[in-house]
Length: 187
Length: 175
Image (tube, each protein chain N blue to C red):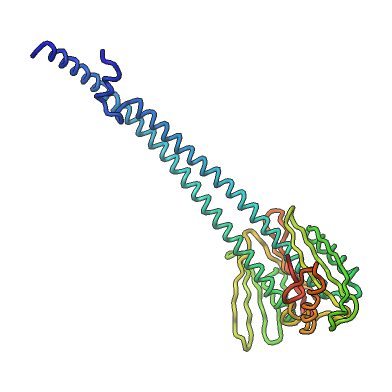
């Protein structure tokens, strides 16, 4: 009888039974592993994309709510701001099932030259979902009339003189990030 | 032929016989192997196509969601601007179309359920007709409410997500 070494000498390596059988199984295992890895990666991608999409939706909802409240704040007379702002926030929070925090901080508006007395800086923070939130700011000045809606609501709330006062205020209130053009800002 | 050559020939013959035996067995086994390989390949191909289809579908849905978010932000700005010029608001019982009558023009917002979009049509004597379309999120149902001078557009989202609400102050509360 011949030994296996002698037999293997006559048979081409690709035609050996053991080698072919093994290669088929190994190829299938490798292919299945690749497909599994791709599937797991795609599942993770899908889950992450879904979470990000939900977060973006919450963020947009929060942004819109904050803008709505900022719009309402501009319609409230200055002397009723403290009470009416809270009522507006509570009502909106109930309607939209979100957490709304409104803080008002007075500041001396006299040095601006265009207005006298204490102005109010209103910070509106809206939280929807678990982590997403949006912040808007509104500034109100004493003796400032409630703006009538015109062509552009955001642009109509300040006169040119008020805009100048904003730029002067920016130098004094270093802790407050004032917007560039209108009363509403965000971060 | 010498004795040594005879021995070598016999060994060679025997080896060839064994090789032939092996190759004849391998032929039958190759058919099974081919069938198994084909079935496995078809299984892999099916799963790969499924994965690709899922990825494409996911990408399309994400693109739609992104576009709808952009459009709603754009709509919010336009909606507030339109409301600030509105003298009379007409909201039918069926919710749509909503007409905002202004000085020399009227703006009609309508909900196109098939195209999942909100349309805005401006009809004016001087400005002519303008038409815009805003894509809405999938499975959403926009509604418009009027309360005093406040006009609100609510876009309910699928699931328990917070709805998108755009509020605007009307120039006049006339209905």
